[in-house]
Length: 159
Image (cartoon, rainbow, N blue to C red; front, side, top):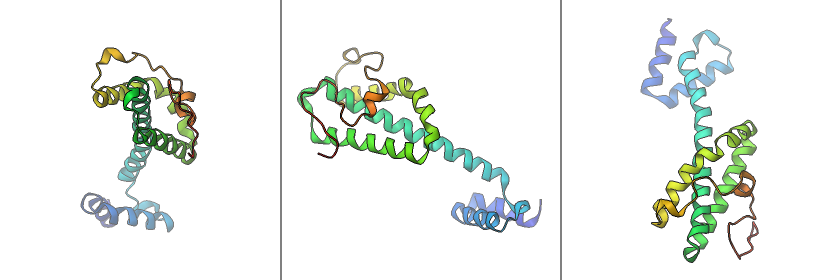
């Protein structure tokens, strides 16, 4: 290992931002041998995992608020509506930025329901037995900006 490569690897541990800037510089100048490839590979893999985690979290929050909306209608609020709308928009933006996440969204939809269920139980103080074991909504309904479960209110995005 060269002295420069040892320095770059050490920089990863001591000043992450400086390390990223050094890696960018090395990539731009095509100094392949000086790249900290071990840590660079790890960081790129982490970025992909972060995108998937953000998608799961946003979908879980969305499902939780849809459940709260459906099973606690007397407490419906503009805040809940705002959260539902925001999560849908954020998921749509994630899909636009990373279209290859679409199959992952299909794959995790029903397992993420557990996150939404936990949020709804905590947020409503209703017992677990009140909520369905399996997600009562389809993915299309969940992401549809006009869908609200069991609602007499017509909800149009942009209102």
